[in-house]
Length: 258
Image (cartoon, rainbow, N blue to C red; front, side):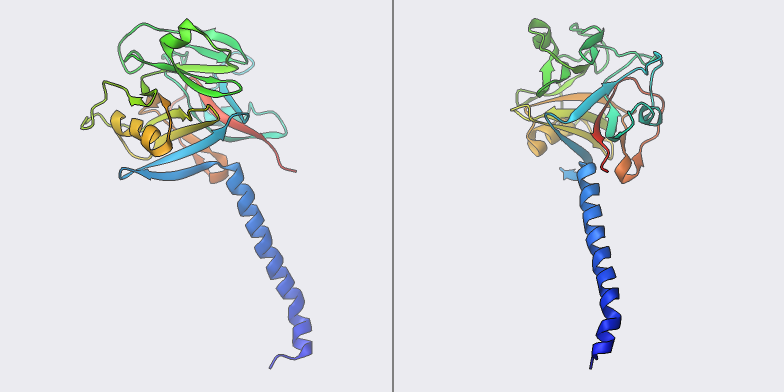
């Protein structure tokens, strides 16, 4: 039988335990909000998907203020202004040996590398390719359509091939292709209000990766960023994939919580 004295002894301990549970719950909720990335299983393959909304502070990076290529997630962290932090980032388009983008790259509305619309070797030249454009909306636009009617983009990066074009898979993709790699890319919702950045957790072919965006996420247009070198960092989850220096990088920045 519990006495009044025992209750007086245990009451403060119970309050401490309750406070700890509440703090743990609130901390977990804040952590989840700050890491909008989750695991997803699609067609027996696993992926990590990070979702953003139009209006979120999604940015592209290439060079630091001194003109040196940023190249790594560690160096990118050093570019984030005080009072803000990096939520996630991944490589964002193909590049040459010197890390210069193969196609269009624009940062803060300034075009640094020109759009390329001609066919060519490699995945980039497997037309149609496309541009990921960040403005008041989040868009993936086929490159020749972009050239015909250039939109205003605060940030833009070109890559290829397109994975999904107006709801259709790229015509060159084969369901049974044995060309498999770790792959990453971006897809957007039909209204341009949502973008999904995805990376495969194991090697997959183009057909499966494209279907992830169209059938698994509902993207009407999606763009391939790269394979083999694909990697992701999500600081709140302790993830920081290693690899050689990159060219363009895309990521989400958010203000620090007091």
